[in-house]
Image (cartoon, rainbow, N blue to C red; front, side):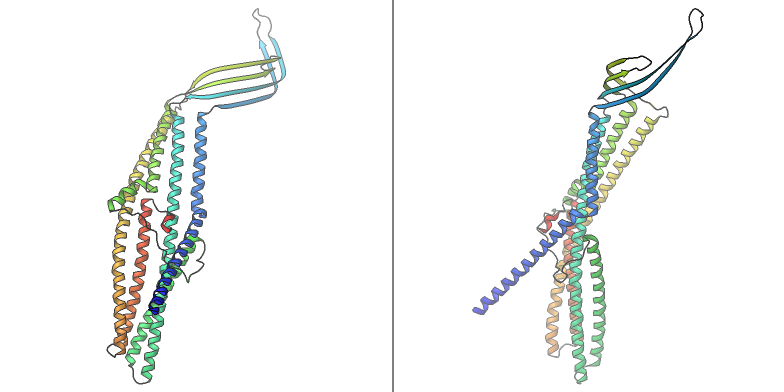
Length: 440
C-alpha cells in the first residue's frame, strides 16, 4: 500500500513538474515575444508611419483655421514724375525720395471651397486608419514569424535528439553483435547489416543537425539572439483559441478583418477622396473672408503716415490653359480605378490564403493523428522484437529496423505536432486575430 502511494505521489510530482516547466517556458517565450514586438525594426517603422500620418491629419485640419499673414517693408523710395502742362508750357519734373516703411497684416478665413478641404481631411484620417491597420498587420506577421521560429527550433532540437539516440543505440548493438561474432556466437552478416543501419542513422543525424542549425539561424534572424537554454527547449503549448467552425466562416472573417484587406479597402477610399479634391480644386472657386490692416509711413511719395483697413469677401479661381484640371481629374479617377482593382485582387488572395490555411489545419491534424498512431505501433513492435530477439526468434536486423522505424515515426509525429501548432497560428493570422494571448 505504501509503495502504491509513493508511486502515485511520484507520478503526480512528475506531472506537476512537467506542467510547471511548460508554464515557465511559455512565460519566458511570452516575455521574449513581448520584447520583440516592442523593439522590432519593422514594427518601429510602422509606428513611425502611424505617427507621421497622425501629424499629417493635423496639417490637413489646419485648412479649417484662419491664416495670418504679416509683411514688413523698409527701404528708400524715389519717384520721378514728368508732367506735360496743358497750356503747352514746358514739362515739369518732380522728384521725391523718402525713407519709407510699411507693415501689412491680413487674416484670411476659408468660407467655402466646394469640399476640397473636407476631402483632404477625410483622406488624411483614412491614411491614419490605414497606417494603424498596417501596424497591426506588421505586428501579426512578426508574431507569426517569432512563434513559428520557436516551434520549428524546438521540433528540430527534439528530432536531433531522436536521431542521436538512434545512432547511439545502433552503435551499441553493433558493438555487442561484433563481440558475439568474435566469441563465435554471432553472424558476420548481421554485423555488416548493423553497420549499414548505423551509416543510415549517422546520415539522418547529420541531416537533423543541419536542420537544427537552419532553425537556429531563423530564430536568430527573428529574435536577434540565440535561445538562452537549448537543453530545455520544448514546444510551447498554445492556449485555447477560438477557431472558426467551418471553412466558410474562416473566409468570411478573413475578408472582413484581415489587416491586408482593410489596408486595401482604405486605399480605395483614399483614392475616392482624391477624385473629389481634384474636381473641387480644378473646377470650383475658393471663397475666403479677408481682413487687412496696413500701416504706411512715407509710402508712394507721400510724406507722413497713412493707415488702411480692408474687410472683404473674395472668390478666386485659377484655370491652367494646358487643361491641367482635366488631366489631374483623369489621373485621380484612374488611381481610384487601380485601387479598386487592387482591393478585389487582395480579397481574392486572402480568400485563397484562408481556404489554404483551413485545409492545412485539417490535413495536419489528421496527419498528426495517423503519425502518432504509427509511432505507438512502431514502439509496440520494437518492444516485442527485442523480447523475441532474446529468445532467438528475431534477428538483429529486425530489431534495428524496428528501432529505425520507431525513431522515424517519432520524428515525423513530432514534426506533425509542430505543423498543427503553426497551422493554428496561420489560421489566426489570416483571420486578423493573432496576438500574444495564444501563449497565455
